[in-house]
Image (cartoon, rainbow, N blue to C red):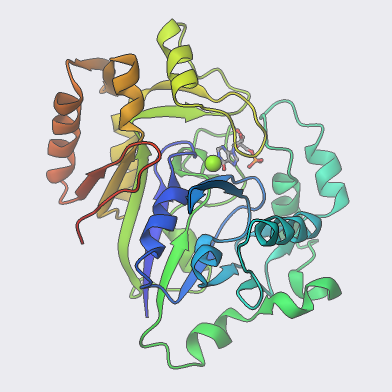
Length: 335
Ligand code: IMP
Ligand code: MG
């Protein structure tokens, strides 16, 4: 059994959905598992020329691959069924493919109401924080307690360890990102789950299973939430426009900034990333500015190729393979 991971190295919205969709095309995976978060995520996917957005259901469904919502996730039951309908309405078959781990937690109306009044963090108001809080306070409700979910429930141990798992190849589809991680992100402007490699282990896998770790970045940075993030410079409004940087879950404008290379390296090293995909390089070409924040300074480049060369060189030093991708095209890792 092998697990490949797709992790966000910034503040979410790096294009993890696109990378997962692209990795699944070759038919190599037997399972896809989401291991953190809930309906707060928004994965934008171009499937057969159509733009689709998923929040909770792993992207295995686009290719007939078993798609599991793991125990580290929180599930809004109504939203789950709405997403099943949305996918079916768009011609994506979900029957017999979608599963929820018995011990995943349930988002209640109280969680939604409470999160719905948040203004200090700028949450997605999908009930995440209150649900995780109650889980850790041992007051939570698990998926196995909900009759409506009976036919979707799965036991992770039975599925992955009580069967011949020698040919299992699992794609672990991350949500949110290192900069939003409850422990490693910019607290308190974080989400309430763990978004890194450790979270995959806590969903039922172990260090021996981990194979490729894809760290996903965007050629610039975006963040949605209450803290001030975007510097006062017209260029960032242009990046926001050119990049169509609106939250896939809430529709809010994403604040933009230059790529923070120190954050990328920290996230990559701490998560054992060995493949880096940089998305949306084309957006910087549109505004004709290529800049990176590094060690407290802003480095400017004259062209895309200078920008790409610099990042490639930094990553090569860490023995990471790197691929650059453009909107909305797929990426190619060359393996
Ligand atoms: P929550 O996860 O809804 O509690 O929101 C906490 C913070 O994480 C807010 O700043 C959200 O905008 C941000 N956030 C949560 N999920 C995502 C995501 O999938 N992409 C980008 N930002 C997110
Ligand atoms: Mg997103």
